[in-house]
Length: 61
Image (cartoon, rainbow, N blue to C red; front, side):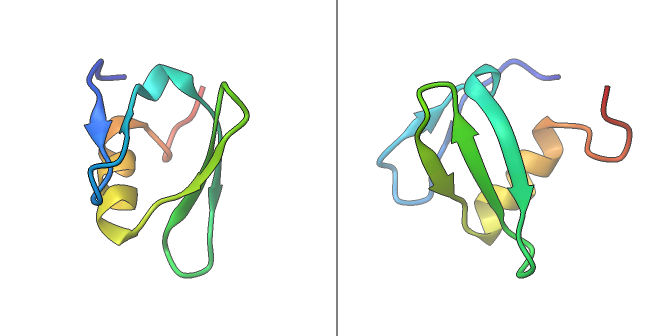
């Protein structure tokens, strides 16, 4: 996994990928993520595409 932060489109948050504890792929092609703090966030399409670049969803551990 690449070690870099990503910024949400509305620039309200930067997320450390190491703090993502759960991802849920929605029917519309976006992700809902849960952070280690328990906060759930819904990503837009651009953010979801970026998340796919950070994590290997084809061959997870």
